Length: 111
Image 1 (cartoon, rainbow, N blue to C red):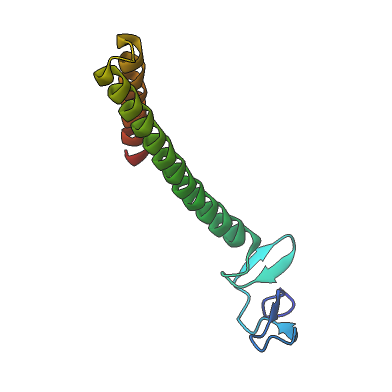
Image 2: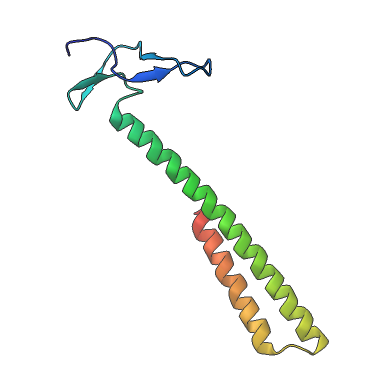
């Protein structure tokens, strides 16, 4: 490496958009440029993929929570109707199947 500093441009925290070159020593060479470990494209990509996977997992958990909540409301409605004599056994069976499927999805998600 011809220069011993990271080639990445960084912005200060003043909020005025001032930028300068990273002051850290270049330890990694990628695409013919020197980078510190934090700014190396492979490190940036790995951090983004890790964060994206975390967000995907959290979003799936929230989605499953909504599914379970919805299934619970459907089951309660079906059981209430069946108890009053307005519903059919099929409604109760469908509600039970929905709850079982939701529980299996939650268990698979939580691992």
